[in-house]
Length: 420
Image (cartoon, rainbow, N blue to C red; front, side):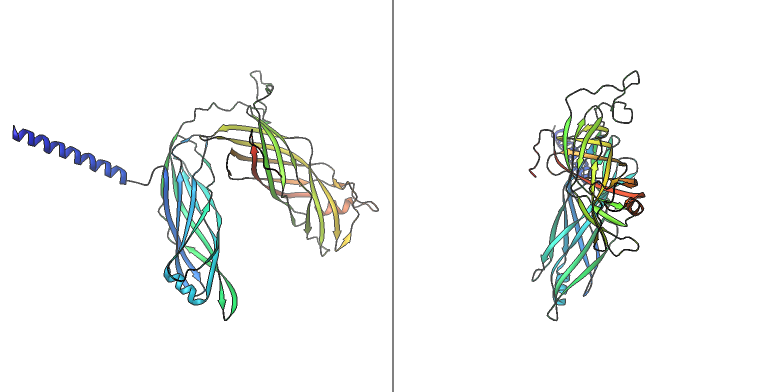
């Protein structure tokens, strides 16, 4: 009896030990799953006094789960730039007092197919005073752009690279000096940071449309849009218009796009932008200045697919068409004013097609960047005392122009907009 009891105890101990070993092996095998994850990299920086190693750490939090077709976004991104004590001492001996710079990187996200590159935009390292002794660690906070999971399974997140650029400021021979410091990334960091479980979305497929965002009925004719259910959206619009003929760039800051997104498949809205001055390089003239005004013609409209995110908010995949007149004001050539009149503009509007994904969520969702090429039509109505249409048509009109716009969410739905 005693031997049998002893045998049972040994067996229970063996089973418990085996179970513990399995759990330990499972917990330690492979990278972290969802939740907080960390990675590290860095490289060699060419400081004024000599080369030095600058490690860079990365920490972020992966969501616990994701749905196919929906945005997935890591949060809590923190870079940690570290200058070892030996580098700090060498910089101090050289005369450095403070430093600043930028740190960024790139993630690779895989869902069973190819990798999607997620660029971590360079974030500013604030101006920081070097310590009297010891190492220096500087946290830098950033934002991870969202990605879309296309198939169920696992979404793996890899650290592809980390980049650093620094500027040191100090005193040499009683004179203030600043030196740019280039950094060469070291060996590729450990690849996989973690994985996010992805399950199939239960959302219905978007309805068929006629290409303009209007749902098609069973008979092939456009289905009438139902009233109500639309989502009001207001976006700040910044951007750059590169005019090939002028050889210059016009900023489109402080613009606004106010629209309504209809869940059945369309978006409609209006764009406004203040007049923006610019200066351009024109052959035969030292300096040409003026202001361009972009005025919308008709209503901007297009297709919009609305998706529900795992959190509170929506994703809108938009394909928008917008027409804008370009009006020229306050023109000067080499300091001589040209009386262009009050209606010097393109004979017809330019046509833009903007495509992109806008995240409608609380907080500060990442901005959306859209681009479009366009041609500038001939000008008409230019000149009061002389016909300036041929001059401006020759200077400005033609193909090969580009507009890059950045859309920043102001408010949507019932959320109040900030007061201007």
